[in-house]
Length: 560
Ligand SMILES: *[C@@H]1O[C@H](CO)[C@@H](O)[C@H](O)[C@H]1NC(C)=O
Ligand SMILES: *[C@@H]1O[C@H](CO)[C@@H](O)[C@H](O)[C@H]1NC(C)=O
Ligand SMILES: *[C@@H]1O[C@H](CO)[C@@H](O)[C@H](O)[C@H]1NC(C)=O
Ligand SMILES: *[C@@H]1O[C@H](CO)[C@@H](O)[C@H](O)[C@H]1NC(C)=O
Image (cartoon, rainbow, N blue to C red):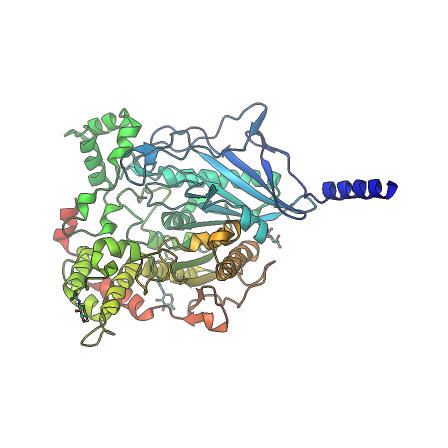
């Protein structure tokens, strides 16, 4: 009896001490916050803080301002509203103007963590939609940072920023400079820099990362003169500031279109602006939805992504390609999914996903004409000959279809990323550069056999879904997830994806001025996963031959 009591007392004592350390209440610049501790394993928890304000409720089309602060303890246990935006089906809006909040995931062991590397995530969604806690599957947000934090030993921060009309409308001059969403991101990163030490983070070890429009955002943050010393490293996945969809070159024309939709069209631009500024935010947000009419006809999906960052002479002082001296201080890791363009190709050339229909050369020509409008029709013959070089006289239908996906992947994602990597490596003095291609076969049912990694399919592995939703994944997915978390968090810790706390399957050589290796990422990784000169034949076409073709003046004017 005594023995039994003693044993149970010992067990109770052991269970108590077996729990990991907890942050409890944390003092931030705005006031105290308290999150929730989640058990991840023996002696391992993650402290989660949801919905901490990093700025005040923003005024329409103004930069974010500091939060006034609060008394007492803010219970940071619920995600806050996303920024006001159209829904995926674009039939209504969701979210709120009161949306500048962030979430923090801090891994804990037996002792309280200190001096951890910090990774700040910027979500994607075409600068039109999305949120820090987007895409719920079985009650688990895609961007939930617990697995990455726990497995990689880093703090993950996910942030909201304004999107759509409220985030990116611009006159192209000082009246309405635009880039409000980028200023929000900047405010969030600055907040992390000032406050993360109290959560156990190292403010000198911040990495920003993002996917799609979030990746282009990371790229813009790197290029902005305002980011000097603010973070140390950056990762872009499927998007850079040089992507043709990432910059709005004619913001005034877009503003007039939106003014027309909300009944603010006036001959005088200043009157039009006054009218817009007193318009209903919900109506303005709806007016920014994707204009499907743009692709019925001669357009391509790319043309529909209209609300985007602009050259404002301030946060983005010049053409992105001319700002890489600002990015030279940051270590940079960048890549694309092998079929990042497939989803767009399927809209532009629907036959590629059809079991019955073949894709014709005419359709390929039409797509190339749509993508290369800025050069008139001059580029179509040369582009077609480059992309059909491996076809032979009777190409397999699947070969032609895959070519269509490759064209969009190259044009929208891969080539701009390769140029960004080169400009970064060429300008860097000491900071490192790494290049990857993610080509895990798609998990989306119903796609043709030749489809590899679709846009955004990298994220489920990076955020550890094969572990947190283990029933819907296989062991090979967990292998891949482990590799990605190891490379990404090592990079955040040391600036080198191959060295750090996590073991990796193969060393990832750096990309330099004269040497261009890249890592192919999938579930089977070995020495042969390192390749060189990714799609250089196609990169050379777009950067050397295509870019030297004269622009078509008529097209430029028509766009206005
Ligand atoms: C970043 O974090 C790593 C791991 O904690 C540490 O070794 C390194 O010194 C840190 N860098 C800076 C600049 O503090
Ligand atoms: C460095 O970046 C600038 C843009 O800031 C670019 O014009 C230049 O070509 C780059 N330098 C090298 C050596 O590539
Ligand atoms: C598609 O092409 C294949 C091979 O060229 C041919 O056998 C088939 O009949 C074509 N299908 C259609 C619907 O044209
Ligand atoms: C970077 O430098 C290499 C070597 O000098 C050069 O071949 C390449 O064109 C440069 N890339 C860019 C984008 O300037």
